Image (cartoon, rainbow, N blue to C red; front, side):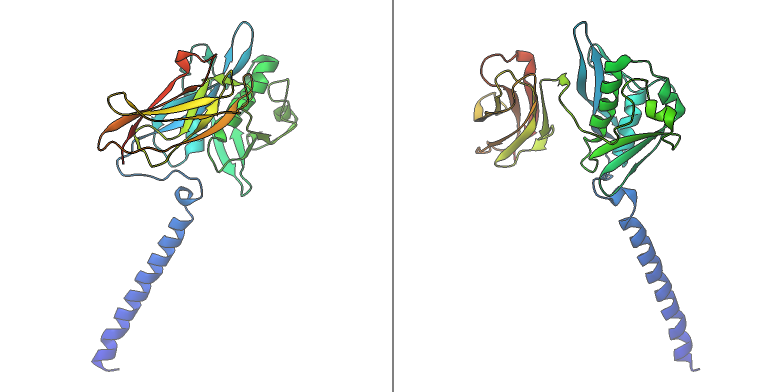
Length: 288
């Protein structure tokens, strides 16, 4: 073997090892939880994120669900963070309550390719005493919270990895006999309107798509775009939504001429008679 061959062979071996390591690491990254469909992506400098939660509210005349947005530490596992916030967080709405018992632990959540999430709790979850309506709404609060994530279409429950007879009885009334459960907003009474697009301080595209859910007396919603001086630069109304007590999803497109650099405000409120001033949703936006 000449000198040239002695030099080339070790170099080729080193290159092969380097490429093999690259392919191995790249393959692992592509299949890591953070890169699966619907997973939250880590962003440099991002320390917090918003998640939507559903709590139960009991009144003298009724019981129903309320939707809240909580500001929590950022994580790539949004569903797990949401359920943990249902367990340990505090409701912000007056009269709203947690239904998951103190001491309950979330053991894991698995999501299959059909979008069914299996939520595995510790046995403390079975100690809740919430009555028949509380059980139905309590289950739906967890289901609605998890189906806020687009990769989750339905939810079922386990305790310590099992679905035995005690687990099926759950809290003693409705039980888990009809799993999996699907998203249902029929008993979500507060807030009257929420917006899923745009988010706060988002740069407004042209046209600006406004999406959300509304519980309105007349079945109509208006979206109004204001400049930083409060002058209206665009307005749109959608009719034909389901009327209260039913909830309807809405989409409104606003076409406008951007007024230049700066900020504006998007207002969304029930159109026509019967609306309430506290039902107005205001979202700060940026101009393109």
